[in-house]
Amino acid sequence: MKHRVIATALVLMLAVLACGGISPTATSTAALPTATNTQIAQPSPPPTPSASPLPPQLTINIPPPGHFYHGVYPGGITGEEDDITLNDLRAYEQAAGKTATWVYFSHNWYHERKFPTQTAEWIRDAGSIPYVRLMMRSDAVQNHAEPEFTLDRIVNGGFDADLRAWARAARDFGSPLMAEFGTEVNGEWFPWNGVWNGGGALDGYGDPAQPDGPERFRDAYRHIIQIARDEGTANILWVFHANNQDVPDVSWNRLEQYYPGDEWIDWIGVSVYGAQTPMDEEWPEFRDMIDEAYPRLAALSPDKPIVVLEFGATSGNPRGDQAVWAENALTDLIAGRWPRVIGFSWWNETWPNDDDPTHNSNMRLQDNPALAAAFQKLVGADSRVLGGLVWQPAPNTTWQWQLADLPVDQSFAVEVYDIDLFDNDAGVVAALRAQGQKVICYVSVGSWRSGGPMPLGFRPR
Image: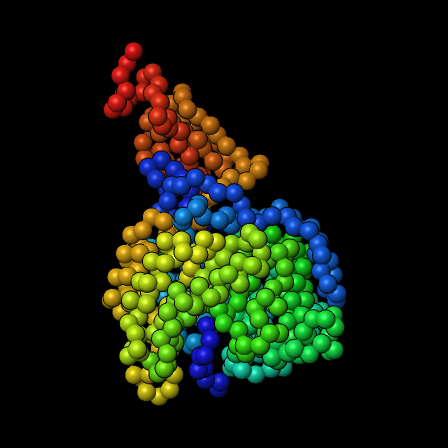
């Protein structure tokens, strides 16, 4: 989120296929996809060391074709994006009509450098994936150089002890996480942007053929990811997060300059905002903005998934209608206008811009019934929009396969039960789930077996 006025004084929660449907956080029974996180090789330009091989990962699978993950930044109080609460999340989910696959929040190092375990735990307990924005900055004020957590100091190991402790805590969290460093990196409002780190100069850092600002960022992000790999932190999905427009709009600051490379990044994300205050003099449409940005994002990698990490428009601007803006955006997203987009997350926040309350920005669903209605229709009621992860069994997953000799023996200490759909009722499924086990049901489709119920259209021979 950009252009904010701030006073100075981001267990596996899964949507599991099971008898009678899937878990309450999901809405699709489509086939399970293959994982997108792969074990990737090494190259890295100096001064960053080569990437070491990854350990086996706790993967976050892409959704089935034509389906979309749904996340949210649920809004806090201070505007610093690190004080979200369960009440914030539930208010959004109730207004949208669906749970969130991930919950987005900032981890501001000016408050604490330790991994934000407490926030991550309540998000996981609520049924979502924690998405941590690693905000290595000294304050929340925008548009100035960073005095402490500089890219040079990150690259040169100045915070390695903190980053290693952070990575170990993330590893020990034990379930999937999403994380990013360098939010909206091609926007000058954040201190990791090249404006504050050498800009387009060629002679102050690294490769004399590469602009220094973006090169410093790439090396810093690679360094952070490498530390996590060295600590065995295999449960983080790393995201590259650009703004839809380059600010400043100069060649060395193009988002392409900042991309660390496919060997480091799992997903590619983008922020796409309409009017952010009631005073904005333009009303940019979502379709126009992402039509321009999408080909550039897709060109970064031949196959990395793309996610609209932040989108929103305020109410109260006379130049446009917030609910119509959101409905148009959601309609295009879910229709697949941008084929590699696999998910999106709304920025559900309100904040003051000055002393006049009529100038407050407000993107909260719960404060605009028409906006909430658009989400209820296009998110809550649409089975293509998922409120939880699609689960896929990993190698060495333990199973109990019992299709006969009822009742089902529920005493096995396994991860997954495979049982017969017709011979068991919902109580059996509920009991297994209560034990923390996943349940898959056997069912014949398009055939008939002796002893089973006779389907319509089949005649005994």
